[in-house]
Image 1 (cartoon, rainbow, N blue to C red):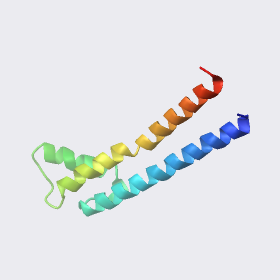
Image 2 (image 1 turned 180 degrees about the vertical axis):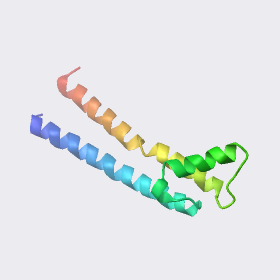
Image 3 (image 1 turned 180 degrees about the horizontal axis):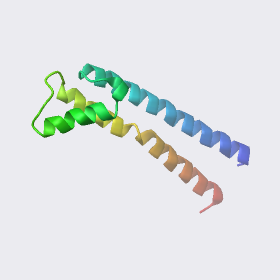
Length: 98
């Protein structure tokens, strides 16, 4: 495999990971809005709502089931890049024969 072929492979895998991440985050934004939260504050608003809920002060306008799903989706949005890193590392190990 030449360097250009390797570069093309790695870019292709990373591009797919970026697309999957974008789809997951868009789903998280939709879920966040449906939960009654501001999707422009995707990371902090659901977190603060859950912190308030857990301390015994739930926000009345928030659907906490959807809030939990939003936080789960945010956490899962990192997974495509973790998978891409493993795919690239495995291909590299196979290429150099280790």
